[in-house]
Image (tube, rainbow, N blue to C red; front, top):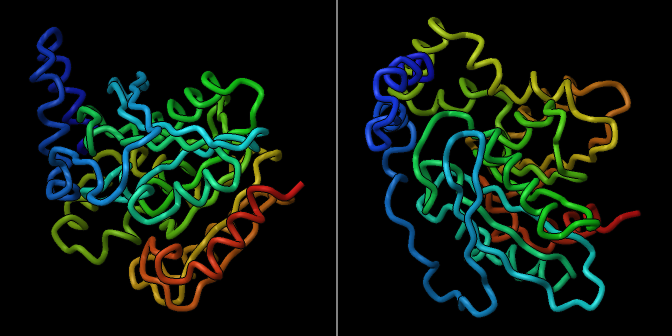
Length: 286
């Protein structure tokens, strides 16, 4: 429903950039309103060596990102970090130690904001397009290097919702706390869940395009996927991973990591001794 209303308003406001995405923004507020605020560099995190950049997305937004190059003489690749919901946006990866660990392991790091979060202007609901744009930008900056994705929750969903694209640019994906569908996640938020259910009545095809347990059926044969869930996660418990793994195409290169106590999206913080070795091995394995 949000996309339908947004498209109608867009047609009426063509040529008026400030108004073009007004209804898209309003319809996002029940879900993300408390996170759609100006972004600040994470407190206590040095900004030495980080480059700020922006690049266009098919979502019509100019996405904001930060990039840091590894000091390793022979970089292993570049990891694109797709953030969970939250005010931290791309800063999530800097604040919680993921970026430093990746840099030390020999990977360049590109962390970006989805449209409507952080420094990326709010446009429509095509967040999978933002995932693609970030990966393609990484390939453009580092031609010839492998491009992987490290993503959590919201970012994980919209990374997996992009896997059917003909130009999907990622080789390996680490998806932590990924919900199998929007209704399965938003059931914990009654008002947002009601809005979502109403929208699915009017535009059911839109919701189905954003349902990882369906989009994973189009996972390319060459792409390797690590699904990370935790028994301590009340928002996306391990049965979400069970449903996605069961729906994957035959022969799909999927691995599972089940944590014990980690909170939602916080494997690195809560069980680093289990989470990080598994992620490192997955990204570096032959």
